[in-house]
Image (cartoon, helix red, strand yellow):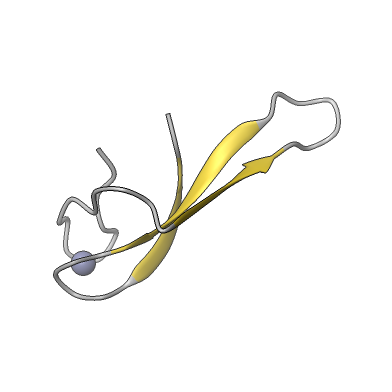
Length: 47
Ligand SMILES: [Zn+2]
């Protein structure tokens, strides 16, 4: 579970996901999350 970087609340499902694929590296799925408690947006890797 992804937690808010500000307050530590679990953010649940991402608003949006996209694949980040740097050359020569393994692609990773990133997600945009919004904290339900403080409203902060943050990005984190999706497993
Ligand atoms: Zn928060």
